[in-house]
Length: 578
Ligand code: PEP
Ligand code: MG
Image (cartoon, rainbow, N blue to C red; front, side, top):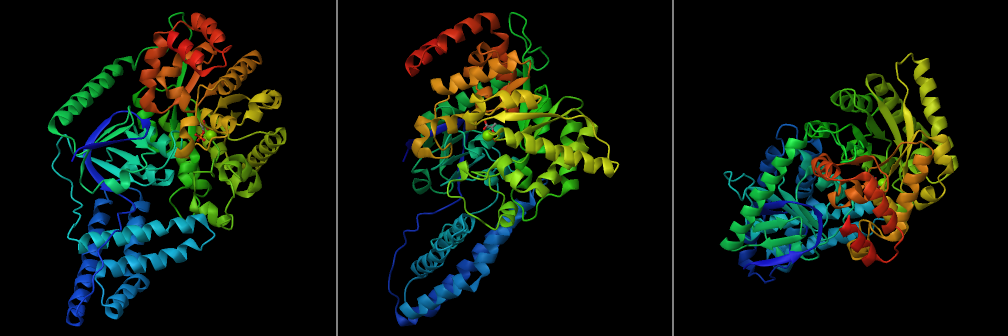
């Protein structure tokens, strides 16, 4: 039966493919009493189902070992295999079948509940979340018991060959793994539009819709799905007419995007001759391929925290150095802005959490995040700083510090950079001069810009957090996602003020939040005076097209007028006129 669901459109495009469910199955199972003589057969049926689920995991493990697939993926399969092999789960089920003479499905769900309840007792949020792994393992066995064996083989390539991940929620650490797998798109029931999960989707250039509320329970594995990532819609089991319509739209979109490629070599300049730099945001060194393909002017934001995710041990100085050097070399002389570790809030790294004694922050977005964490852990920060400084020998490196609010944080950071430099000098390591910049993503920083202008070399406005903290909207929370408004007059004022103050002080200023990659906002930002944008490589050509159609002087006047309004509909009206 065809039906459609709607959520937050977070990454455009169309995917047509089969559902791949990755969390909570409907654990509604029948409960019936067995005759004494049927108990042995039920035990055998259960054992066989466990064996089949184990074989499925083995098959999945080889599926996950495609070249370049991260080791964490097979580690994930290993965790599931371990849970399946653990007698806590399976022995309990066998006891229940024997003692209560109940069917295996019901016994399985009861036992799962018992184990999961124990996980709920953990204070630690990360460990609490691991109960999802148990639920997924139970789902797998239930599918087998109910005769729905999942085959992990790819179908022949057809228009419907996209693999569409359907999940209750995905963490940024989950999503980053999609970079090595061929995922056509994903939908989640939770999540907000600038959560890092959504950001990774845009970086992968795959359609994604979050905050769908009910997709996970309503969709079955292998259902035919269409994601309309631009409209935030998901169509389940479409009829042939709808399917054809979407195939056509998908082909048209692909054609439009390939036409944009003609802009690759052209100069990013407005009609009145203003040059505009378009840099790339990257999460992993391999993303430089896409950045180069579209002719990015450099890397404007390397979110280094992704190097720290999905692993038990922290990357040491040499490993980090190699990763930074790989990016610098790939960018062949173009500037590379390396942001220091911005861990915390929705970006979790278990190795760092372990180190922090698994402390749970009562409000992670306002807690020991980013530079606050690094200044609290100077030894760990110094490792990263030394790695970046060593890599600076191989090209033009700029160091970017996230989440600064206080003048003293700038000073402490600069002292640590100096210390790292001295340590490297002592060790006779080569390095080059590195500019140091600050992210403007806390309203306090935008409102009290003086120390930033005096002590740093450049600024980069992180609109994702600037919006979150100005409007007091958790950017990952779908319940308040409708209030997350980039065009709120307070946000626009903070941005415009920052850009103007930086320009008056002759300090380079960029925007590297998601607003920079939204072609609908290009003219607004140009009108504010912005000349440096940083965004996912997939957005660069569309934004360039907008730049090339713009008259910067004219936009400056119109945007000045727009900024005088404080009613959203008036702002929207003025924006349309741009
Ligand atoms: C931002 O906050 O706008 C930003 C670029 O940083 P992140 O999205 O990684 O928090
Ligand atoms: Mg940020």
